Structures are given as C-alpha cells and as structure tokens.
Amino acid sequence: MTAPRRLLLVNGPNLNLLGTREPGIYGSQTLQDVEALVSATAAVLGFEVRAVQSNHEGVLLDAIHAARDDCSGIVINPGGLTHTSVVLRDALSGVALPVAEVHISDVSQREPFRHHSYVKDVAVVHVVGEGVAGYATATTRLIEVITGQADG
Ligand code: CA2
Image 1 (tube, protein in one colour):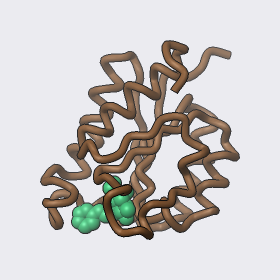
Image 2: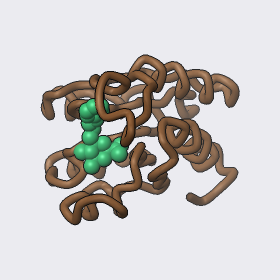
Image 3: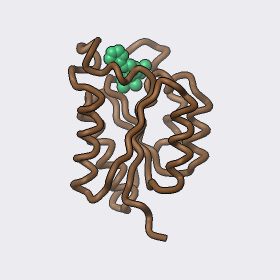
Image 4: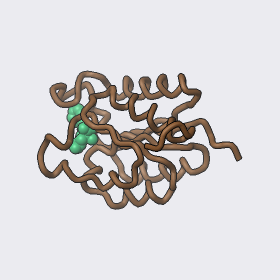
C-alpha cells in the first residue's frame, strides 16, 4: 500500500495558551497560527495535516494510536509531558511511525527538570529553540525522512 501523504500534528497540555501568556518564552503566535504554519509547510510538499491539541493525556494517546491507520508521520510538541510521560513515549514507539519532536523554547537552557525528554529517543527529528518557526523546520525534515530524502 502507498504511504498516506498525511501527518498528525500533536500539541500537548497548555499549548492552547500560546499567544496569550509568556510571550518572552513562547512568542506571540497562537496555536491556530502553529496549525496553519504546519499545514502550509506540509502542503508545499504534497502532504496534508490532521491537528490535535489536548490537555488530556488519553486524548493524545488515542489520536496517536489512530494515526496508524492513515498517517505516515507525527510532528509533536508534547509540552510538559515531554519530561514526565513514559505513557506518551510508549504510544509513540508503539505506533512505529517516524516522529519529529519540536519545542518552541530551548529546553536545554531552561530549568534542569526540562532537560530530560522521554520522547527524544523515539523521535528521528529534533528541533528546539527556533520558536514557532521550528514547527516548519520539523515538518519539512520529517517529510524528507518519510519520502527518503534524508535520514534524520
Ligand atoms: O518549549 C516548548 O515548546 C515546551 O514544550 C513548552 C511546554 C514546556 O513544559 C516544555 O518544557 C517546553 C509548555 C507549554 C505551555 O505553553 C504555554 C504557552 C503560553 C502560555 C503558557 C504556557
């Protein structure tokens, strides 16, 4: 079967607040801007995007599991779950799709509790500290991996 030309974009807890608070860390663009950026970036490369954001871990897990059926990769900013969730990591490794992990801020330069990512070694693309533009970088690099133009 031909691989679907569709990505799942996952934004974790609190990312619905983008553009409303903490602009010094996360910028002034909204979640809607992020989703539009990823869709436009993917569209140029012939991919469509299904976007999910939730403050509930189980909703994110269900969306990741469903991606097995009709997506060929996952772009994810897990938010704070990055640093806490074995469950999220297991879901990502369980669906066995290529994953791009993106963080708006440079987590390595922030508090020590943000330095560890449970997702890191199940992702093939990592983008940190590029602001919202990092989602476009992650999307392009993930599609290159999917279509065989790069190896991560
Ligand atoms: O830098 C990132 O993208 C993070 O994944 C964002 C998470 C944080 O826990 C990670 O350590 C790094 C936080 C998302 C919350 O986003 C907000 C946005 C605006 C206002 C308040 C929170």
